[in-house]
Image (cartoon, rainbow, N blue to C red):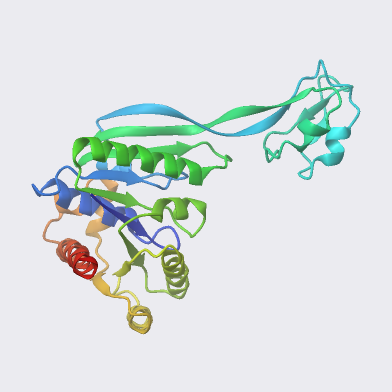
Length: 310
């Protein structure tokens, strides 16, 4: 079983459109029709908007713990206020003689618990979102929703990936495709750790090149081999050339260049992949070629690795 992750240094580069296109290609090939999918952007999951699940299993996600004060036991001494480094504790509005914790400001460090002489504070586990196992026309997808303002997005990504892997192992999936989150933070680290290959979607702009360098550094740190696809490559030719030069200097391969094509946003607006509505569009033809190149590249790398270790 292989795991691919699709990443970029920022949002809006086309990761989800590419992932949805790959899902359609997989589901229409006997060798890969049992592929499992993961939407690892738990803060703003949208792969399911294109793949349109027909049924879902919903599961609660419980993350960290936050401090809560029992106002009936609190003596209002203020010891908790003195040790709180996040300015999260205030006099209670309902009982001015007791203290109250602002759970948005609370970081869950538990310093107040140890400082309280009245044993009036406890750490309470928090539900921070949901994760889902859904059936789509392209296969099973695991995705999640983190509640607004909640932390632990990296932990939730790890949870979703673990569930996807267990499903893939139990059902003989040959491949897991992960639609990664934007940026280079904890969710990205959780999404790319241990995968077989990273596909970086880059856009030809100054910001895009900067973000490309950041995500390459992240994948290099975790020793994940990667390749590059330039999206909307013809809207700024100079930027595309800069990406090619950077890739060449760092011995990275650009395996495809998707032209600007209104077929992609038009199909997304209708909750479809480009292949379902515009199979002969220029972008659709290039996406077919990229998928073929990507699977061939990973297969060749596996053969080389086997030869070296034999």
